Length: 538
Image (cartoon, rainbow, N blue to C red):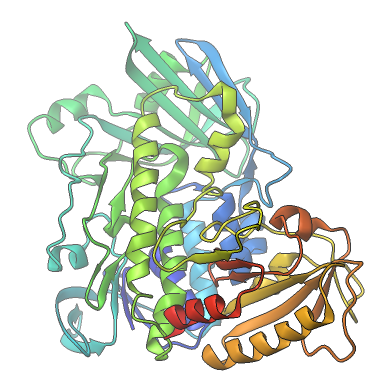
């Protein structure tokens, strides 16, 4: 497996492959790790769940700060204040500079035995039915390597995307403005820990914008605003590509102070400029995420305005979706449609995220009627793969259609008990890891025949999936487990599982390695479940 590009997307994919024992080369054209440029800051709740699964969430929390919410000010008047600490979320919104994210991911990859090959650039690729041939150049010359699959996570100016001749409309999606970005300390009387958006409108049209994201440290912010006139005048004579550019002198502290003077509260002062740059916002998405044995992910596949912090988080989730599928394919356990499901699931997600980010990039758009729902969307907690080819369900004619459906993110559950464990468990503790998890449910109405049937189905499923599925029986406190039941029994002591998954009577949920429900059956229909397993595992 060859992964081109060692940013957050490529590192996430490399970790997912390495933790499943798949040999992976991770190359990057840069010769050094990223510097102190902040770039992406916001880490979404869904990404935090991924990091919990990968074993790095504690390190991320230690290195970042929690973002309390968002305040929007238009023409000097506060129009919105949204709190982000929702009790139903497993994690709040974390502020973490991208260089810290990459450090943490790099360390995790190294702990799994991986290394980043830096100063290695992709020069070209060809593919056939058996694999991909890539030309790589480094300081000691050019080499040709062979891989079963190649993934391009090589950013906004992706070589892999160009080699595949993918249609990408980012040029048409460029915003005309240039922007400047800085890591700076700000003195003002505004509450700490909030993302702050200051907008100026004239006749209903936005003509000034300042976004301030808190960083770790007293009064420290990553601020973004429109580039100063001197740079805009130069840019009018040249074609500035999307992303960060080094064509212009970095903006000065005085230029950021001028932006604060125009948009922030009176008396606001900036000091201690650590870093600054110029960048251009663009948006676009490729027409295909897969061509044969080559895939694109992250910014190589989609570009977004930075509103909502969607870009890095979406790329991480691309990799989390693709990693387990490539691992099954590498081991010869993938059904014919498994790899195609990556594009079927992730391209619509990319389109949705891009559309939302473009919509709110330069407005104060926020639905006060449903701020909670909007925040859950931005945290990508409501993202679903419903209706895509490789998720399914079998519901009896009288089965109530309630609870999370096939394709939805599997919600966590608390208060589970297992014999021999002296503390309550979360569902996420059961489903974490590199494989699928099959959860059978039984309550007081479940007969011994039902539960013995689970044993037989589990044995058949394990054989069919080469042992890559963990199976549990989740039982209501009133359910009677027959003696010698050959399944691990998890007791739903507080009936939280029953409530969250809307279970009544015998049913089953198959949870994929990426935390989405791949299949649900109510009642348990063995044939339909086995058909789904065959489609996934071949």
